[in-house]
Image (cartoon, rainbow, N blue to C red; front, side, top):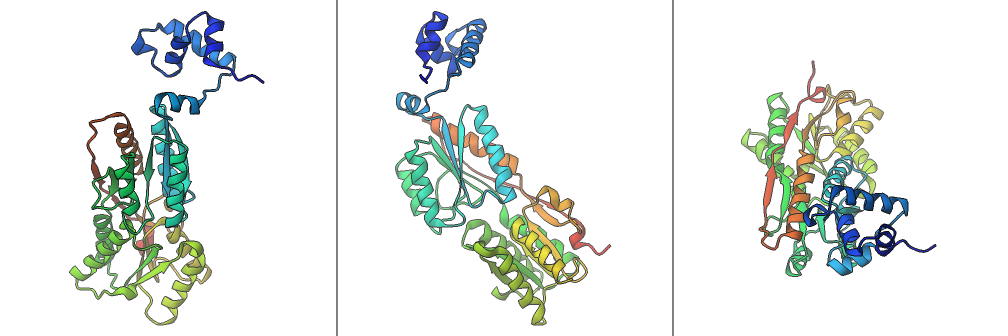
Length: 340
């Protein structure tokens, strides 16, 4: 079946191919094309089932009108919500979005960046799994537009949208101390070298020290991404079998918090009576769990919208200057840290 072209639409309407192109690229208003004519072009395009040739367009304009998004795990509710906001925001600017997961593998992230660039995406929004900024520095040297989101390298003068993880962690830890907790355990998802994990650990550790509590690395259990549930069960068995069980657990992301709660229920460990449970990164159904979970809420809508605005400005504005936006979090106190 013959592919419908701009020329086919133009001939059927008795107008120029250039006019059709302007309308279908949303340039009709700025080129003085009447709303009536634009309506006819769109109607005919739908009637003929016109499908844009994005490859040809990118070769002609130098842009594919496509963005890439790389996150650790799209099945994580935080990233899936963030991705939806980014997709909607990109769509409002007539950009498409390709979404990829690294599975917390630095090598896979590098391959995904190569793949997206080979597909001629105009820019990438990235929550990196890298240990050092070398690969992102290469993107900067190539003047390829990208935005660091959630996780970032502070030393890079690159567009960044993130939250104040240290402050959010410190506020949550102070809440636990204020209600009488003295032995706070941390569940940290691997790899723990990422900026968000390091900042959340630091916020908890420093707040404990400032309030006269003992602190050392024994408080941290590293949960491997490849076997979250198995590692959570090992951590619980270790804590509750050696007589040094924490009176509160601070989970550094929502996925491991849920796994911890499920494992406690299997072992009949009562929350909050035996152990208080908290999470960095609030999700909607934390309110529906029993007990509802205390958590730090991230402004994911602002994060997603700002990252798209930054990236598109970087793509389309030659005078773009990099920005670093750090947003505040909000502590949501619920029954998992309350006895009454």
